[in-house]
Length: 115
Image (cartoon, rainbow, N blue to C red; front, side, top):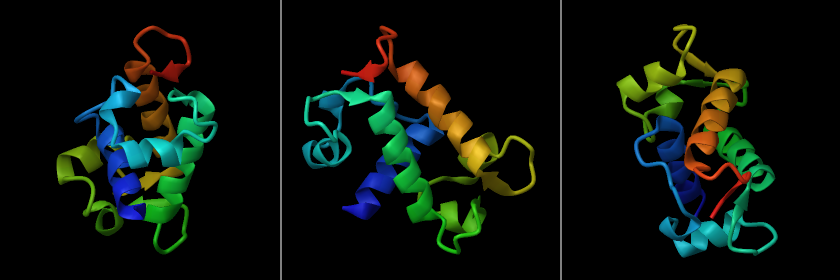
């Protein structure tokens, strides 16, 4: 399930298939992310999930994602899009900024949750 959650996270991160509703997520993944089991993803739940995914991808635990760490999840164009300062690393700040933008885009009604 770890690989599935990380893949889901990077799908959102890459902006290729933002989940507009919680129903679009795999049921098991939703259950793992939806900590209070209300059927919605709050910003806090999404952030906790994003944190977990980043830590799982950061295999060398250096606080950044190199291209080799990201290759199973992102193609080169997606990687470069998230690597805003073009240093060939995705920093935690770059990752968080992209995840925040993706959450805001998916939260179409602005209620602070994905439903």
